[in-house]
Every structure is written in structure tokens, then in C-alpha cells.
Length: 507
Image 1 (cartoon, rainbow, N blue to C red):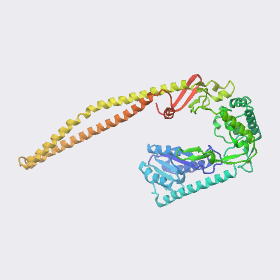
Image 2: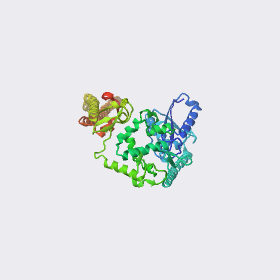
Image 3: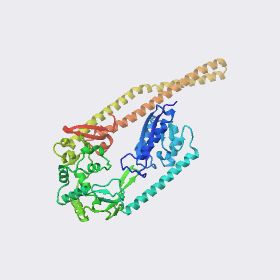
Image 4: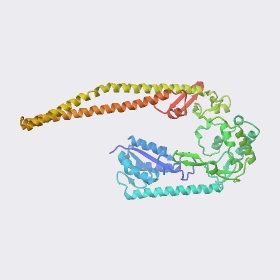
């Protein structure tokens, strides 16, 4: 019985109905998992087999390369770590029937991967798909395209009607019980929103507003929503959350508080595999859809204040995180890093002492990276030296070719002696056999030497290319965005300038 490593793959489209809200595992995923587990447990051949699962929740099945869990599963199959994939049906695996067919008929058979679609009664070990499975795949693809069109048109119609379609409501409002697409004021939160606008209109800075709210013990937006029973995206970090200048700015910049509903701000970018913002002229805005908390004139005044204070320096991405709460550090005065949580809360917050100079930290990381790079270069140079030592064996190629030429010449002379009748046929056969063996051995040795020489050349080229790449980075004087993206995943800063660097490579 074959020893399988099974991957249970589950997917829910972002177009499917998800009553639990964003970022929460959908009921459909749970039902898919239950179906697959029941199937595995009912098959004696899978008893005791190792099982893993991959799940893409909220991603379309029309595209294969934009699903991270799917791509990881395929990568594991290519490495031989997965040899059986089980799905609820083929549509969960993918809705592009052409690419799905490539996997079922070419890629999986080549990799030796067994594929099972339970509800389609398809098992690659017991059937070859044929017209039935191909037709189903085509139907899935057509269904997906038609469903996408209907969903997009439905969303556009709802946006034009001014219906609120987001899963979560903004701070200050709640959904009406009678109509979930309409908003009503949340009196407690709406009073805080009104107060934040009043403080800003009175001339208070964003930092002062955030400190004022934190000093009074007013819960930040996410913590407040969580306490009210709403599902939120960051429930696991509520203890580290507080009002910050950023969260105050986001609240003051949202014109939903004027009574307007603005929809279709985002669209899916297939090439990037993520959502991106649409041009503002493509947004759909409908006024007067719910009770306003601030007037349009007050909202415009606040936006004008932001315009007057807009930074003139170009945006520079910040890569450091607080080791205490995990929040990305803030920057002020050009290079001073600090944790906003510690800055906006009272003195006893441990995050308050997480601060440093960005240029100082950059130098430490760059120095550590160069040390690791030097190790790589030293290792590559050792490979080149080892290759040079192996080349001495390649020098024997000339003498082998000479010996081969002599053996072939002697064999030719042997034929001439047979033609002159100076040697009998029996002696000719014996000596010819000797020459044939010698020639075959010499040709094999020459082939081996040529192969070794080619391997040496390939190895040298690869090593030289890696050395050249490393040398280019060793000459860099400061951390660039390219270096951050290529080598560093995250950097956590702790009190006393202690750092924890997560590299994008194994040391």
C-alpha cells in the first residue's frame, strides 16, 4: 500500500456569501474540511497517512497564481513533499478549465500526484477524466465568469443606490436592524467622533487629540467594536491598541461622517494579486444616506487644515517594529524612531522606552549583512579554488586523444594487413577485439573528462556570478529599499537598542 502525504485543499471565493465577516474563517471552509476529513477517514488506504491542509479564504478560483496557499501546495508537490491532493470538487481547486486540465492531465501525472475531487467522483488513480470531467471543468469556468459579472453588476447597482455594503461598520455608526445596508448613529461612539472633529477645528494637533483620548481612558475604534460584539480584524492584539495620530487622521479623513456613502474605492489587480485603489473619479458617491455627525462645511475645513500641513519631503518607508507590541515604529525629526503606543499612553507603558536613531540601526543591520555576505563570497572563492585543483585532471584530455588516435591508426593498419594476407583471419579477429575494447574505453574516458570540464566551467560561472553580486552589495554605503526588500523580512526593536532581525534567507 502506497504511503501518501495528503494535502486537503479548501477555497472560498470572495464572491461567495460570508456571513461571518472579513478575515474570519468562513462556514463554507469548515464544511469543506469536514467533508474531506470524513472521506479520508472512510478510506482504509489513507489510514495512518500524514495529512496537511492549505486554505485560501476569500480568493477567486479563476486565477491560480494569486492564491498564496495554492501556490505553496504546488511548490510542495514539486519538491515531492505532497503526493495526494483532495478537494471537495474541481471548482474548489480552480475555475479556469484550461489550466485545471493542464494540472489533471499533464502536471500531476508527471509528478506522480494523485488527485481526488470528492463530489465529482473523480480519482486520478481510478479514472482518466475523459469528456465528463472536461465538460464539468468547462461549466465551472463559465459559471465563474458569469457569477463574477453578476456580482460586479450587483455591487455597482447597490453603490449607485447608496447602500452600505461593507462587512464592518465605521466607528460612530452601526447597521440598522431592519436594513443592514443602512446606517444609524451609535450614540456613544458618535459623541466621540463629534468631539474629535471639534478638537481638530479648535486647532489641536493629531498627537494631542490622541493623547487626550487615551488619558481619559476612551477605547480606540477596534477595541470599542470588539467590546460591542462586532468581529474585528485584530482581536488578538487588543491589549496593545490605543488612539494614535494615524487613527485620528483616518477618522477625520472619512467623509462618511457627512452622511455620504462612497463605494467602489477598490478593485482587484490580478497582476499584483491584491486590491488597489481606483482613481477617485471612478468612486460612486451618494449624499444624504444616513444622519450626519459633522456638516460638510466642517469636514471641508478639517481637510483644508491637512492640506496646509501636508509634508513636502518624499515618503520613506519605515521598516522597524516595536518588540513589545509588534506595532510598526513611527518616525519624527527625520530619523528618530519611537513606538506610537508608548508615546500616546502614560509613563508606565513599556513601549515608551522603545526608541532609537534610524541611521544608527541601519548601520548595524548593514554591517551584519555585509559579514554574512563576506561569508558567502569566501565560500564561493573556495569553490573556485577547488575547481582549479580539479582542472589538473582535465589536462589529461590531450594525452587521451593522442592514445585514441594511435589505437585507431593501429586498427587501420590491422585491416591493411588482412587485405595483404600478411595476417590470418583468426589473428585479425583477436587483435581487432583488443583494439575495439581499447578505443571504447578511451572514448568513454574522453567523454568523462569533457563532462568534468563542463561541470567545472558551469560551476565557475555560477560562483563568479554570485561573487559579483555579493561584491556589488559589499560596496553599498547605506541601506536601500532594494536591500530591505531582498534581504530583510522584519526588524524588532527592544529597549536598550536590542534588535531581533528576521532575514529573508537562512544564515
